[in-house]
Each structure stands twice: as structure tokens, then as C-alpha cells.
Length: 237
Image (cartoon, rainbow, N blue to C red; front, side, top):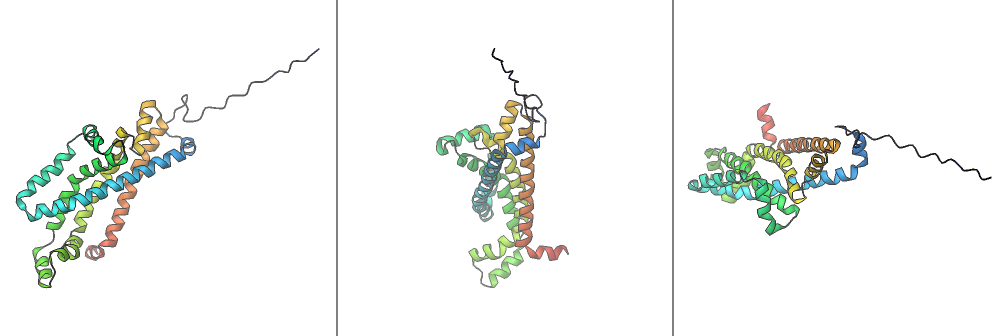
């Protein structure tokens, strides 16, 4: 007579805090299990943000210099840079895709153009904050236009420019999430997936990291400004 062994089925594991049955808003286990995915998304978000802001700075400076040198073009330049911000990302990114493809470059160019709204005006205001007496004194010491700009005007305009740069950077951190339209949204990809799947832990984690990233970049710019403008600390004291 053969004895049939009774096979006990394995006990199902308790659902985690981010399973379909529980789906909590905050779940540290999700952060541990998906740490690689979260880090990759955060790094991509940071890279796109920094590249977009740098692109905006490179374009904004000559526009601000042109607006200052040719006053009759100021209204047109400011209107152009402001008008770019009114173009919805749903329209701007598809317009860039035929030229840049579905790539991070599409997002970088689009966000850099949006940043011009803040950066052009901040640079123009910063350059105008330098008094004429300072310019005349530097010119009397033999400073040419290029040296005057690099050695005198830009350093003195830096506090105003940095204020605009901080706003542009924080704004770009938020707008980078829209890059999910072309699959290069950094943390925006996680947010989009979390909304579509009602994945609360993923949604909240990505949103919190966006805020943390914005705060850290802002603090970094504040520290950079204090290092680059030591004379402002003496004035405040």
C-alpha cells in the first residue's frame, strides 16, 4: 500500500505596501525594490534640467546684450522670449521632434526656450543695474567693451542675474516632467506611470524627489552666488 504524501501549498506572502491590494501613498519598500529605476530617473531629470538651463543662459546673454545696445529692439526681444512661454509643451515638443527626434535633446531645447522668459529679462535688468559712473570709471582706466563686460558689468550684475537663474532653474525642474511626452521626462516618467496605473507610491516618491531636487539646486545656486560675489556679504553686514 502506497502512502500518498500530502503536499502543503506554500503560504502566499503578505502583500507589500505598494501592491495592488494595499497601494499606500508612501512605501519605503518600493524605494528599496525600485532603487535602480528611481536613481536612473533622477539622474536623467538632473541632466536634462542642467543642460536646459545652460542652453537658456547661452541664448539669453546675447539677446540681453542686443536689447541693451539697440533699445528699439528691446520690446521685440522681450516679447519674443515671453511669447515662447505661452506655447504649450504639447505643441512645442512635437514641433521639435522632426528636427531632433524622440530624444533628450528635444526636451533640452524646449525647456531652454521656456527659460528665456526669465533669463533674458533678468540679464537685462542686471546689466542695467550697473551705474553709469562705474562704466565711465572703467572706461577711463582703459577697459574696452569686452573687458568692461566681463570684468565689471557681469560681476556687478551677478546678484540680479542669479535671482533670475534660481527662478528659471526651479521652474525647469518642474517642467522637465513634461518630457515624458517624448519618453525623456526623468522623474516625470515615473509620475506618468503612477497616474496611469494608480500607483500611489511611485507617484508620491517621484513628486517628492522633484521637490528635493529643486531645493538642492536652489541651495547650490545660493552658495555659488555667495562664493562669486563676496562683496555682497560685506554690504549686508
